[in-house]
Amino acid sequence: MQLVARLLPLSALVLAAFSTMPLQPDYPMQGLQEAAQVTAWSSRDAAQPVSHLEELIGSGVLDTLMRLALEGNPGLQQTLLTLKIRQQEQRSARGTLLPQLDAGLSA
Image 1 (cartoon, rainbow, N blue to C red):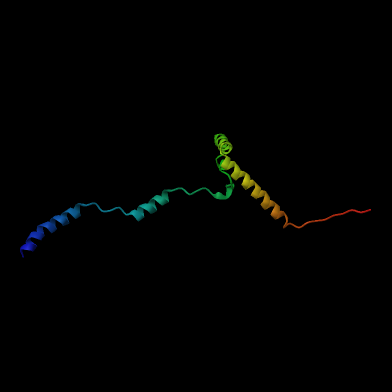
Image 2 (cartoon, rainbow, N blue to C red):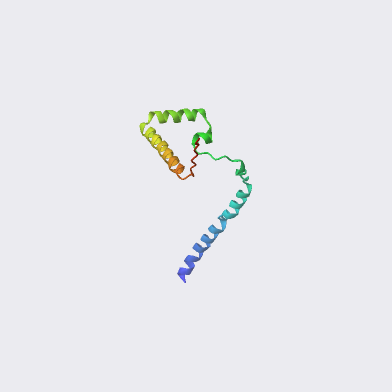
């Protein structure tokens, strides 16, 4: 009985402390509200495909820096040369798959 008498004030204190704590925000509801405020992205129908960074950004300064980087790095130059060779080989290999036409004239 003495234990209960000792714990009763302590439990009352704990309950009082929890009753003064603010309620936690409703995070899922906040997420939905914020998502509703975001404007939709514009349509991608007018978008144009790009294959290089400089096409996307279109900056003369970036073009100059990229040219300088390529000129100053032999490893990048070799990689670029290898890439161009492989692209030409691929085009040549594709060309053999196309139909061929022979035409001749005789008199």
